[in-house]
Amino acid sequence: MQAWTNQKYITVPDQATVSQISPDFCFFETFALRSGKVESPEVHEARIMSGLEHLNLDKTKLHLNFSDKLYHWGPILKNLLSTEKLTDAIVRWMVVPDKEGGLTEWVTVRQLPVTPPSIDLFLLKTMRDNAEWLPRPKTGPWKNSQAALDELKNLSPRLDVEGVQFDSLGDISDCTRSALVWWDGAEWFTPSSETQCLLSTSHQTFQNSLRSKKQIKEVAQPFPRHAQSLIVLRSTFEGGAVIVKNVFNSHGELVWTAQPNQDEARSALNRLKEFRVQRSVSLL
Image 1 (cartoon, rainbow, N blue to C red):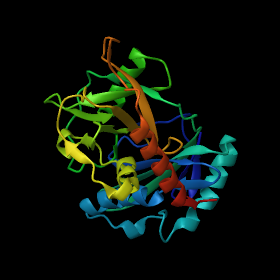
Image 2 (image 1 turned 180 degrees about the vertical axis):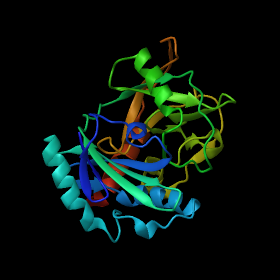
Image 3 (image 1 turned 90 degrees about the vertical axis):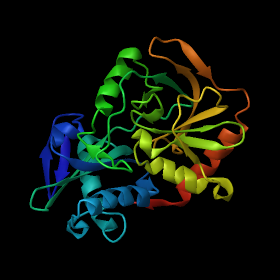
Image 4 (image 1 turned 60 degrees about the horizontal axis):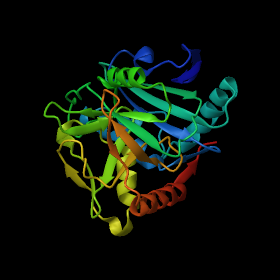
């Protein structure tokens, strides 16, 4: 697999993970490229920049961003897409700081999977570990999320599944690759940062798309068995989110299923899709 890093192209192992490319601390973002466009790129840039600012690193050293350096993406992505024989793709942008304050950037592309019409969740035993700082940045090696993903793969080989992690108090925290929100019939909820959940770009976009900007309540609580609807938010999903159909425990036993009335959830997903399309930016 070809990768771009600081003005040159090199070969890395096929489907190389973040930790394989950089075993040291780094920041990274993944986003979908469809028809040459990325949706809501500003939230991905903001999360990278917040991490750099937290460590007092000079963000002006970056070759890439989505504000004043947008034109740098085109030649890089065209080369990578051509080499990997892809049109649409998942793009990964990594920023690796060194001890002298320098920044090394990486860009890779891989095949973009088809978004499932619905998704099932498995409640995992792999506990969410403590964040470097809160709100939790997206960093690599990405703590124990890989361990959670390995557990999920052992529970089910299906592609339309996601795993849920809990914190040390048993409160719902994070999905292995996604954020989570739920509707109880009156309000929207999501895990609070104290559960070690990730600072989610998808959650921010979902919040911004809600009708009348109704605030999502952040809570620390066990799995919400009372919920009417559960939604998995992932920036690489078409539309940015998918409704959860069933939830299973780590023994494969059904513990929750979506209620028949999903009108509020489907309405929220339609608004989210429209919101993301309106904020799409061409990179090619």
